[in-house]
Image (cartoon, rainbow over all chains, first blue to last red; front, side):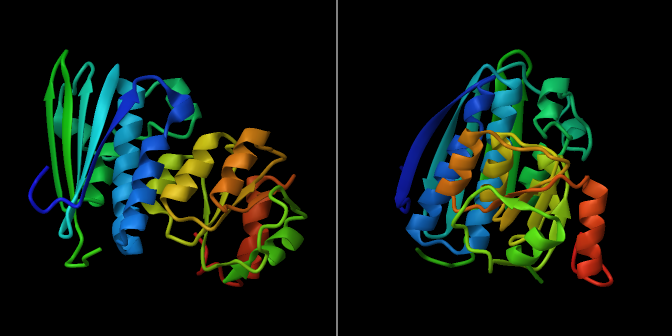
Amino acid sequence: MAAEDVYRQEFPVKGGDFAKAGTVACRIKELLKDLGFDAKTVRRAAIAAYEAEMNVIMYAWQGRMDLAVSPQEVRITVDDQGPGIADIELAMTEGYSTATREMRELGFGAGMGLPNIKRNSDVFHVDSQMGQGTRLEIIIRTNGHKP
Amino acid sequence: MIVLKDVLALLNGELLTPGSPLEVACPKVFASDLMSDVLTSAEPGSLLLTGLANPHVVCTCSVADLAAVVFVQGKRPGPEVVDQARSKNLPLIATKMPMFEACSRLAVFFKDGSHGR
């Protein structure tokens, strides 16, 4: 836990568990609201977390989301064990998707996940190893609003 | 701006979450079956029209701060979805109208459609 973190929690995410999709993002949203962050910060973090959570559920075997909160920023780190992303630049292109029909029927897999995480983040890094997994680092700055 | 009471009347809708406040005002309307699009483009406080009736709709609306959901074309979510919406204070409405007709009626209400999307 970094010196200025006021809150930190890890959440496991199980690949393929569509029934529980969104559970982590909704919990993160409640936590950030309870910590007193403004609605815009909470919404950006919740959307980024939801997209990241869906990616683990849709594509990976298992993963972990790590929420770390300081007065200055919300950091969400996502580590999954999965097939990895072959071409990160391509995966960041809006509309590019390798989603299955099942994923699309649930309303996801439109190729907007990673671009939308980037849109809602101030800092966004993707690192992926084929056959091993993917790591996302998401930082949302709170613009000086201190909970 | 449209309140849920007007939405119910315009769309011959049924409130699936009894007790939800009908004076909730929505400045915009967003219509889509793609939750990816809702997460990307819907503005906070919007009314969502969708033909999708699974639990992800409620979760998406909660995460993206949407005000209420209208399920079109006679689609009805299961009781577990309604319970989930109740727990998140998200009003749910069902209408038998197809998406186009529902959108058209709301667009007329908004007069020039400039407040909806």
